[in-house]
Amino acid sequence: MNGTIGSRILNRSIVKHIPGCGMNKAVMGMDYSIVSEDAGSGSILVAATGYSSQSVMAIIRAVNNLAMSGAAAKRLMINIVAGTDVAEQQLRDAMKIAVEYASSKKLIIIGGNTVCQGEGSGISFNVTAYGWVNTLPERRFKPGDKVIVYGNAGQYGASVICRKKRNKLLERFAEPYLKCYEFTEDMADISRVGIEAIKLGASLVHDVSFGGIYRSLYEISELSGYGMDIIHEGIPIKQSTIELCEFFNLNPYMLLGTGGAVIVSSPDKLPEIEEYLSSTGVDYGVAGELTKDRAMTVRSTVYEMRRSLTMYEIDEIYKTL
Image: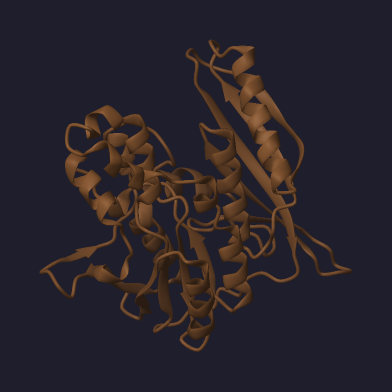
C-alpha cells in the first residue's frame, strides 16, 4: 500500500471512529481541521497536514490543504520518519532545504519529531501547517452549483514519472520533448488560489493530490450530499500527460495531481471567481455541476464515453514506480 490510503479503508477503519467535537468533524474530502476558536475575537485556528518523501513538497501540500479553509499558513511542525540506513548528512541536507524554503515563504518552524523506523534509506516528511482565519467557508451546496477544475490533470504525477523513468521515456520521446514535463515548486503551490476563491464566495475548494482529479471530484460529491455531472472535455489536461500515460498504460485522471484544485461555486459567484482564475495564467475549466440525482458521472460530448466516479483505491503513479 502506497500513498494516501484507499477511500473504503479510510472511511470504515479511520474516519468513522473519530468523534465530532463542536463544529469540527473528521470527514473524507476535508483538507483541514479546526483546532480552536477564540470566543473574544472570533478568530479560528486551523491546521492541515501534508506528506511527501521530499521535505519541500510536504510543506507545500500542508500549506495547500490549509488554504482550502481560507487560512494562510503561519507556523509549521515537521515530523520525520527515517529508515535505519539514513545517514546524518542526508537528514541535515533535507532539513536545510526545508528551512530555506520555509524562510522564503515567511513560515516559522515551531517544532516536530524525528524517529528512525524500519530498514532502508528512505525518509518521509509529515508537515502540519497552522494558520488563523476569521470565517470558514459555509459549505452550503445545492443542485446547479458549478464545479470548476483548476490546473491540468495529472501534470505533477507525469513530472515525477518523467524524473524516475527518464531513460524509459527516451525510448519513445526525443530529449527536448521531455522538457514539457518540468514542474516547479511554484506550480505546486496553490495556496493563494484557495484563499482568493474562498474570499470570492466559493462554497468549497479541495486540492487535488493522490488519486488525481477523479478522486477529488468523488470526495466533493460525497461531502456535498449531491450527485455530480462532469463533462470530460471540461477537465484541463496537457497532451504530454496523455502521451506519457498512454506509454505506461495509466489513467491520467487518476494520477497524482498536486498543483490542481476543484472549486464549487454558486452560479452567481462564478463570474468573479472565473475572472480571478483567468488572471493566474493557469488552465481551468467549468467542468460541470452538482445534481439532485446522486449519480456521480463523467461523460463526453465528443466521444461515446460515460463513467461513474468511484472510491479511490490507489494512485496510478504506483503502477509504474
